[in-house]
Length: 242
Image (cartoon, rainbow, N blue to C red):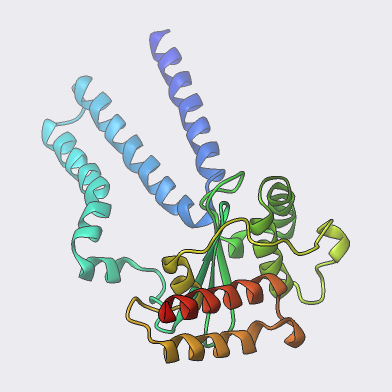
């Protein structure tokens, strides 16, 4: 009887853990399943050793394997070469801009004009926009409309690019443009234009010109992003002459 209760408890725990992993962002599920398998292996080794059906050496090796897997993220952060080896895709080499709101972080590739986004808070925290379905994006947009106007406009800029012929304005509700909710800082302005701390006035003007040509509303771009780029340029130019 105790064994049956223990078996049921293990099965229930596994089901709950699998459901938890399935609720993770897709890019994190693989790691979740690996941790689950290693954890199950460690538990099985402990139980079998306690029952006398597994030599302690096997249990020790299993424990070392689990410990090595758990310490891998620390090793990757400590050694850049391991970090490069572990990446599934090569790191971006071109210049990028970043716009961040309370709920979203969006990057713009200067060479291609492609937008990529990450959810920072809310029902899809840690998800990337690229891995979300149309229905999930609609749910996220509704949440942004309730919580943060800047995040709403930033998400709309992504939706307009991803669904150029299929995203209906009436799906988004009120899409009127909103002013930025706060003052821009120097670090934010530099990130928007994709510049470093040593950027000169010519760098600011050149980056602004290149970006605005890609996303200006008159060229099918987005009003919100164009406004952020203009705001970043004005802030940095004003700062450089003050």
